[in-house]
Length: 215
Image 1: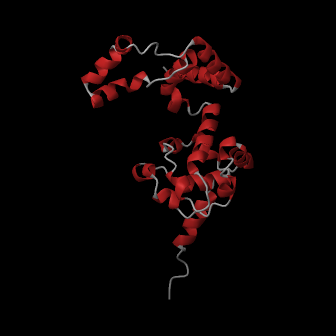
Image 2 (image 1 turned 180 degrees about the horizontal axis):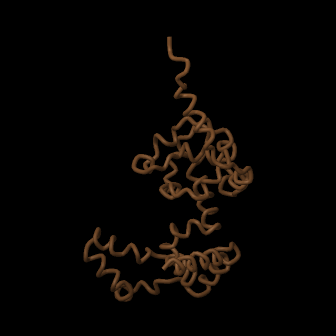
Image 3 (image 1 turned 90 degrees about the vertical axis):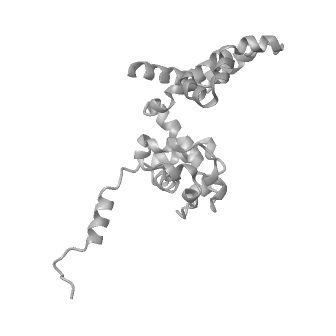
């Protein structure tokens, strides 16, 4: 007969797991549900059956600690630790999860909402800071471009020819008769109006200030 005095290891593990349950906030669930990007995925989000199909097909899950099924579950539970979870930034929105989900859920869209909440709180500035230059360029000139922090890696991958091309881009365009690289002032003003009305300009300012403070 088994020793009745010996504790059941399964019971101990289960107790510890539930004792360590994170703080849950129903308002987080509502924020996710009410985000316009979730318009076509609300029913799928609420009826997730945790089948794991999203994770089995996810390229990011193969090489990182990012687990789409876990994100879907925690989002549905209102797990506030999602607001400081760096793993959501491994998703690159290929939408494989969305295309395969039998409930028409989209973890890719859930991630986009969570990322936005992280940016609003200031937590995610470290993830988006390098793109502030691109966004600032888009705001100032109506057109973006690769962040300069990526140039050394791109030059190494594409070779000296690419680096020379970038150094003489405006001269090459002039020789080919392609005209100005950037849109006309009227278009730029329209872009700035849209960004200001949607709060993008203010968010960009906060990201830039956050980067300056960390330097």
